[in-house]
Length: 185
Image 1 (spheres, rainbow, N blue to C red):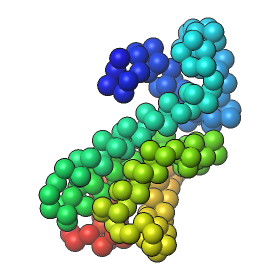
Image 2: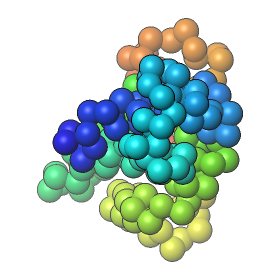
Image 3: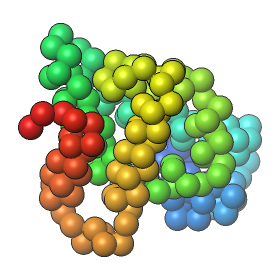
């Protein structure tokens, strides 16, 4: 098993599905397309995952593992202000690195629904907000987080920045995010 708990074959299927979902959307990607891209039969895909929904869940879990790892870096720090700064840096860096997939994760209706229904994701996001931004019960805090999330996610996928190097984009996004979250420079 790999570190994420999936065999190498399942990991290849997940990575391939993720790439195809980014290109065609979840609804526009068939199991046959995944099988063809892997060079295996559709039956072999069914041997790994019983349904396309299971693949969608595995893709979401895979992406959440990266986000959880990014957040955990800041969570390990004792100084609250430093932890907040590092967490924001880690999350923005992850979004920039994965910018090809961010648009899909934010806009594909199947993935949006899957994230909304994923209890682990909801707990992790709630904990992240509570630890680094404010009370999750406060509607103003939730709106602020939603705006920043949409802004960062929209910015990394926007055609105006498609030609920017990851480091340049990261630097600008981090500066703006720090201002929005009122994190001292």
